[in-house]
Length: 282
Image 1 (tube, helix red, strand yellow):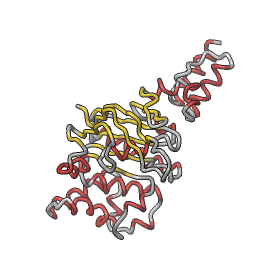
Image 2 (image 1 turned 135 degrees about the horizontal axis):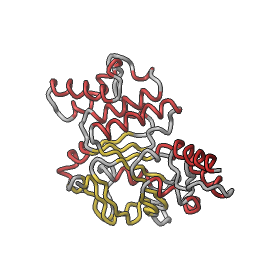
Image 3 (image 1 turned 30 degrees about the vertical axis):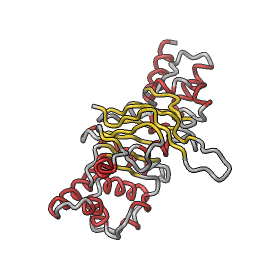
Image 4 (image 1 turned 45 degrees about the horizontal axis):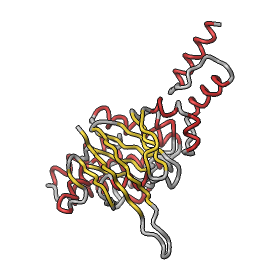
């Protein structure tokens, strides 16, 4: 089933006086299937964050349509159902926290939906369990590490029970440990809960963990394929100011040097296996 569909979507921010508006999203058409794990990449200013905000009605297209499980985001009567279906997690978790106690912060979303107290308690318990933070329910979030805060930000979105979660560079401010914590949560939600994940990131190693990668450039979809297929197009990626992950760069360097190594290597294990086969053969 199609979770989100964009049909010839355009969006431009208001320009300064005397200047012509430039489309941040420029004629984009795509479909995202329910249960998929999609990574979105692009250089700064490529339009990927604007695209993310169009997915749940935070921004509305100037032209074209965005539908979420068949509902047009321009339908004002159904905007709350759209935003309940598509949860957003942003780069800075501090900007998403509203309470000084973890469980109160997680309960904020369900409370605003007008849910009964018993249901709110169930959702808070479930959301904290999903991100591995149940033991911190009485803690103060502002004293936690970046990775813990971001996991709580995800829990706050999960408490609304969305079908899709969009992470807009949610690992950008984290150290490697924090990024790993968040990625583990994302994978569990996708694989165990069947949640659709749309992950916008600058970290190409995280992209390798997705089933599909969309490269955005100049507000347009430049590439749309599996990570393996996209990263095998190293020369083309330079045009979009995207550096493939280290393991792919190493495979390319070995291949350029004459080694019989495939250029579409996607993991360290695959590269190790390829090198071992080469050495054993020689």
